[in-house]
Amino acid sequence: MASAMILAAGLGTRLRPLTDELPKPLLWLGDRPLIAHIAEQLAAGGVRRAALNKSHLAERFSRELIAAFPVPVEVLHEPEPFGTAGGLANAAGALGGGDVVLWNGDILIDLDVAALCAAHGEAQDERGAAATLAVAPRPAGEGTVGVGARGEVVRLRGERFGEEAAGGDFVGVHVVGEALRRRLPPRGCMVGDVYLPWLREGRSLATFAAPGVWHDIGTLAAYLDASARWLAQRDLRSHVGPGASVAEGVDVSGSVVGAGARVEGAGALRGCVVWPGARVGVDAGAPLERAVVTTQGRVVRAAV
Image (cartoon, rainbow, N blue to C red; front, side):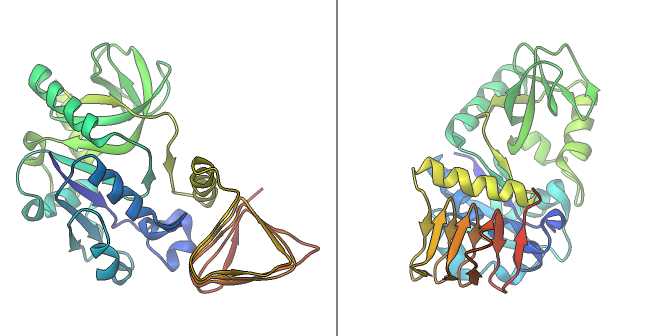
């Protein structure tokens, strides 16, 4: 099975002020940080060796957090983000040779990692594909990726490399083969600096059909939507973590209250995320809706 890397060094500027307190991959989602869900997916897919890069608020990636992952993870510090390609290049020693599953640390998706790796192996053997991108299907001409009749990438960032049979959205999870790993720059982007030059040379990249429902947690609205889906998948009206307390007069619906948090007052909490250890009061005359309450006491509301 391939090794894996979780890209977690980004600044998360669109999610400020949440990312002034936590790196985006550590945002609380359901009963644990987002990155823990990713590690679980990788382990379930057979990955037994992984790396993770960190930069922004690097001290937040505690040893206790990493040690709890179901797969051993080597953490690499970047004094400034090296980019998606540069981060993978910097992890060469930690990952060894061969194929690598590359997973953006802000992506939540129920993806069959073992099937993705198997599809990459077949495409590599049959067509010389140097990487396989997980792509959520869309009609031809739509989305960020164009897909040919054999599942190959024929459109990327507006550039065309063949006849398009279907469109799709690249979901931020891919398998990168050894041939492309040897070409990685020390700084740079996988798409702009690696995949596009490869395609311009007439070479092949493959796609893998990903689920149509997925979350790129880059905005407050997307974060709250991902939290709501986590609840819905478990048929939960709400989730209150260990050691958390909710006052008797508070009605909690469609919300996640993290471990050790306190919700006080009398009113309603709807579609919210209260981070572990946070404290918030609600008023009967003004329900708190579609908001995130941070550990430092910020209440950040999504635009209606």
